[in-house]
Length: 265
Length: 253
Image: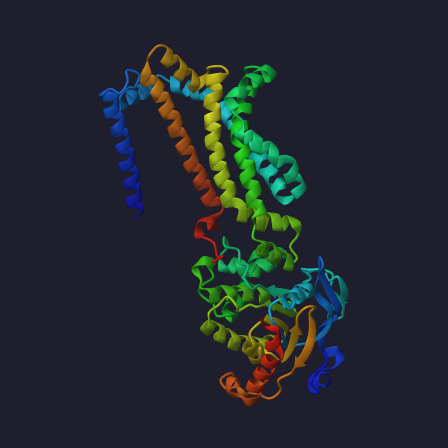
């Protein structure tokens, strides 16, 4: 955390922290994946975890999700220590993780089904989120009848439908094509504004991270640590069409590349 | 398209039966009857009721054995697939059972369990169970990890993971194991009637051969094949009803 920009902490007061990672380490056998990593995720914002492959960003996300235990350190979500998966967090998977034998509506409602919500109620909620991610009319289709982008929309709707306060997205757009991905990024910005949830977003695309994030945490590998936190300030309100031309956007992209370049083999 | 596949099935049946008829007329062997003679014998045995009496005998060990194999086989397979210690303990038994020359073991079974129903059920189980157990176990072991992780991330209970993720994901391979197990069970049932005591369809085959009534012998063999095919088709229908999504492909691409 050597080069934190001056405004990184000053704009965020302690009560606005939704997820806080405190001195987390993770050891796999004799490989140290994460070392003494601390990071705060402000409420209602989208924070990206960005870094070269093998830097432990997905490991960190799964530890926050409670899917992996940390070797030491702790995670707090809304002040409560994480001991396993919980209703306050939901996960969007890189490979979508849809049930191939279930229709779109059952897939979207699956999180609620596991929580024992009655069928009519959970399908009503699922329909709402299917509309929200733009899949209205596809409720009765099966995953293999959808394109990659549509499958991930199903994954996103499933994560939204359980109404968790924190959404964890593990490289959600890496398996979809470039054009679909751009549309997704625009929709994601809209979603962050509408849903008032905390998003934690893992990506390996610098442009994607700068485009969608309120805060970008740069992770460096072996062992993983946070090297820098960047908070883009000026281009967020200029509209989705202007972000990619904004000088600050381009500067940040360049700056991140400069600091990551030496770690990419 | 659906009609086309039906026509193709009928055509292939016509070719096989036609070849059978021609081979019977040449004749390739004195002991090889024509298709028409065999069918006449089949209808005669159906109408005089002897076929039904025979199947009453044959189906008992078959149904009991297949039911035992299916239920305990799937149960054991699930357990083996879920626990590596159990896998280590039990898998070798079923692999050996699958490879064992059953006909050579029958005298031992008869010595232990006599010549009654028990021995025949055992033969059916030894034939049917290994493939059901091993298929179920490997299907369970190959459940996509990301689906289990997804369920865990939504706080699924272990029972939910088993019933809503592992079983449906494994069901295509479990059912293919069941189909193989059932056809092996048919072989076991006939084998036990030929090797232990001649009853039912095995009796028709043995007796007809001994009095050189080859059309009846082939009619009995034909009927058991027909029954196996019908049963396997029913099993496939059951699978489609129970796990609708299985013939809808997978989304791992």
